[in-house]
Amino acid sequence: MIVATLAFYLFAAITVASAFMVIASKNPVHSVLFLILAFFNSAALFVLLGAEFLAMILVVVYVGAVAVLFLFVVMMLDINFTALRQGFLQYLPIGGLIGIILLIELLLVVGGWTLAPEAVTAGFEPVKGVAGATNTEQIGSILYTNYVYLFQAAGMILLVAMIGAIVLTHRQRPGVRKQVIADQVYRRPEDSMAVRKVEPGQGI
Image: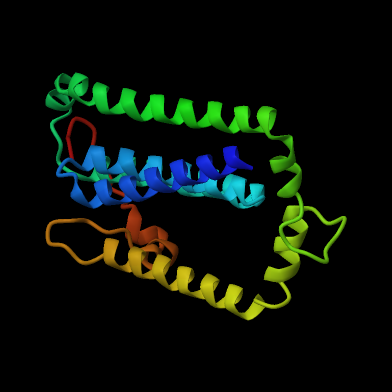
């Protein structure tokens, strides 16, 4: 089990260091890269605990959401993309370093499965007394029975946050033409077109 212990301390240390660099970096690009690194290491910790489903959800949802959010922010900000492309090479060292760290971590996980197979079998049943159930079944059974009201409350909070973001985005701003659906629905034909009689040889 020494391999799993060393992997845990490595992933935990990198997670803490990455989280600190997220708030310490002055460059937002570096902060996002360190945040993605922290998410990957947190997912690796979940794998060591036998929660493969949580690790997959963390990578798919959070890393994907961070990438989409970063793209959304870049598109909304007034950024000179020509200057951004010119400074692309300055991000190459930090990106390459993070890539190398992720590669080493993946090799350690695969090496741990090879050198210590008992560590893999030890994480198959993190919850005692639920023999034969998969990790996803155990999470669903606990989430939708003991914590169903909290789960629904979390969904309502996210719904309120989504509505608030939409309201803040569609605020009234001078000089911006806004679509009014009610006016379009109740528009009459005589309000949208006019019949004019044009005599031959004359314009409108």
